[in-house]
Amino acid sequence: MAGESAGSFVNRLAHANGLELGDLLSRVGEGPQPVNPHLPALAELQVNRAALDHLAVLSGRTVAQLQLALSHLEDRFLLPEDGQACWKWPFRVQEWHLVRCCDLCARARGVDEATWLVSPDRWRVCLRHRRFTDADRGRGPAAVRLETLPEVMRAHAERLRLESRFGAAGAELFADAFQVVTRWWERTPDVWSWTQRAWGVGLEARELRTAPLVIYPEAVQMAREMLRYEQQAERTRSVRASWLEEVQQLVGGWGLEGVEGWGELVQWLDHHSRPAPAAANRSGRRGRVLAVGHSRLAEPSGSLSERSCMV
Ligand SMILES: [Zn+2]
Image 1 (cartoon, rainbow, N blue to C red):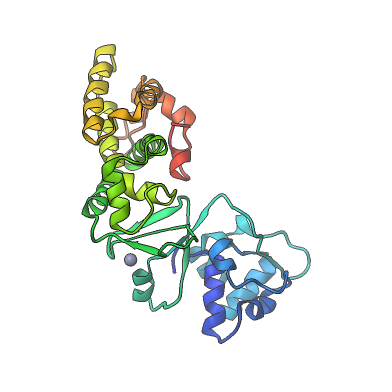
Image 2 (cartoon, rainbow, N blue to C red; image 1 turned 45 degrees about the vertical axis):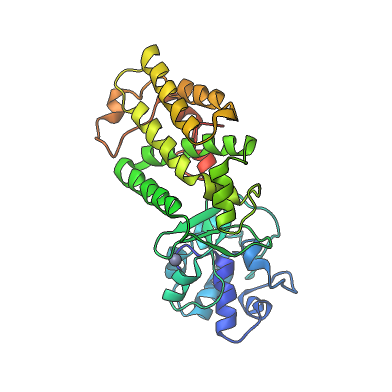
């Protein structure tokens, strides 16, 4: 599966051949045995070049095919060569997340067992099958069904439109908006609409995994407001003041008047007070570049928090 973690793939390969995970890995190379069968859900497998060659033979694919589909098998992630094929499966928190693949997407590809994808963020939405999946391994459901939350589906579709229309700038504005609204959720998770959304899909309102799901509609609305501000030719004091006032009204309408979140908005305005130089914008709308202050603080790729200037 494209974007699958190496460990998830090897786990499925073992089972497809009637083997336990550890048995297959012993054919891939030297590594710490016995292998915990829960590892594919929790951490990522690492191999060296010789072990990757073995894996290619065992799976009937070329190394190039494996590296194309499974990004963590790319050369830059390989373990150093030490004369023999070896692998490691370090049990620790890594900088990326293993997010459960939507089961229906997997089934459409002929895959019947649990599969994990590598993702810069802790969660994903499948628009086709209306599923929310994440890196949570708690007692809750592996996938949250979104049929009863059409506003979350709409929000996700709008985020994708924003990103396809404005490219990196659209993605970064969503990241900013998401960070701002997440902070508000952290202070006031009990906003009625957020609580209702959580309960509607059987999640606890104050659970961390709940946040991205319940704040999604507001995060996208906030991104739209931020885009409107970024598109202003002038960023005078009065433009800034009227934007702030309009956004405060909008946020009040969400039932968030008690959140005292204006600090975040002012901080965001400060980072976005100077438009990007005209030269950077010359390549047209898709190449649009965000304000100087944003670019100085945010990474162009990575997780939502890395792409945001709201550090
Ligand atoms: Zn799906």
